[in-house]
Length: 489
Image (cartoon, rainbow, N blue to C red; front, side, top):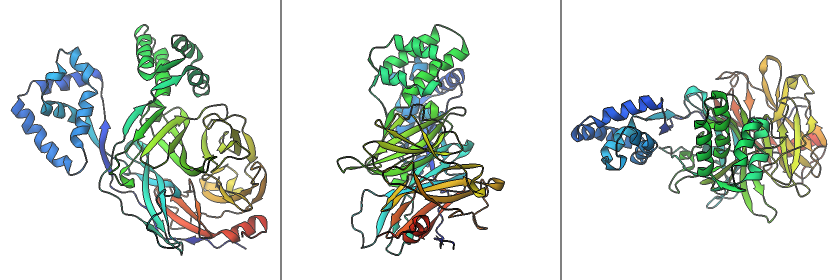
C-alpha cells in the first residue's frame, strides 16, 4: 500500500530580485583607460552624468552610493600607477568612476530551487499549532551562477503553508576575512592535494606559526612577481584563495530575511555556491546554532564548505577538509552522536556514506551505508538534507537517479545510536515528478535539501525540475510504520 502524499499546491517561483553590488573588471589597461576618460571631463559634466544615475538607481537599491564608493576604492592602486592623487578626487567623480565598474545582477532570473527548511529562531506572537520557518533556496542567475537566498514561511496547525512576501531590495553583506590563521591547520588541510605541494611548502616555510591575511597576500604577490610561469602563479593564487575561503559576513539588522542573499565571494566560489543544507543543531550545553553545508565551485574544482549562524544576520564560512571531504552532498546530523559530530555524505558520487569527527571541519574515514538497490535509484543515490531524529531512528530522505535521469525522493530509517545501521528503506519512491512537475530548467527532477516535522507531519520542501519549488506532506506515523512496523508515540 502506498503512503498518502499531500502535495500542498504552494509554489515558490523566481522573483525579480536584483543586486547592484556586483563588481566587474575587464583588465587593468581597460580600467586605466576608463579612469583617464572620466578624469578628462569637467566637474559639471561629472555631476550632470552621475546625478540622474543616482536618482534612477536609488529607487532600485539601498545604499547605492556606498556601493559605488567601494567599487571605486577597489581600483585605488591603479590611480597611483597613472599619476592621479586619489584623495584629491571629488565625491561625485569617485561615484562616477565606481559606476563604470558596477552592474545589476538578477540573482533569480533562471531558477529558484533545492530548498531546505529549519525552525525560525523567532517563534514569538504565534497562535497555537503554528510554526515560523526559514527556508533557503539555490537561486540561479545569469551565467548559471548560484547564490543562497532566503524566505520566511508559516506552518499552521493543519500543516498549511504560507510563504511570506519578499522585500523590495537585496542587501550586500559586509565581508570580514579571518584575522589570523594557524599555520599547521591551514597547510595540513590545504584542500586535500588540490594545491601543488611544492608551492605550499615554499609559502609555508616563510610564515610564522600564526599569520594574518595581509601577510599572506603580500607573500603570494612577491612570489608571483619573482617568476613568470603562469601555471605556478595559479598555484600561488590558490593559496590565497584558500585563505579567502575563511571569512565572515554580516547583514544590516534592518533587512528582511528575503533581502539577505549570500553571493559567491571567494575565488573558489566564483562559479556558484550550490545546494545549502541547513540544520538546526543542538550543542552539548543545549544551546542552538544553525549550520549549513554547501558546495563551492570555481568552474573546475569542487570544494565542500560549512556555514554557521545563530541569527541569520551574521554568518561564518569555512571549508571542510580531510580525506572524507570529497565530492558533494554533505549533510550534518542535528546533534552529536556518541560524543562526535556526524555527517551524511556521498564521497564517491554514487553511494551514501556516514562520517564521524571530533572536529566539525575535519572529516576522514567515510563508511558506506547505502548503494543503489532499486531501479529508480540505480544510477546514483544521495541524501536530501540532514537526517531527522524520531523515536525509532534517524529519518534520512534520499534522492535516487533512475531511467531517463529522473530524480525521485526516497526515505530510509537509520539506528539512533549507530546511524551506519539501516533499519528500513522504502522499496519505492516517496515522491516522483508528476505531469505538472516534470517540465522546467532541468526536466524530471525532484530534489530537496532539508525537511522537518510539524504536528505529526513530515513537511518536505522540494525543487521542481530545477526551476521553482513546492511542498509535500506525509503522516509521520504512517511513514514510520511502513519503515519499521512501529508507530511513533
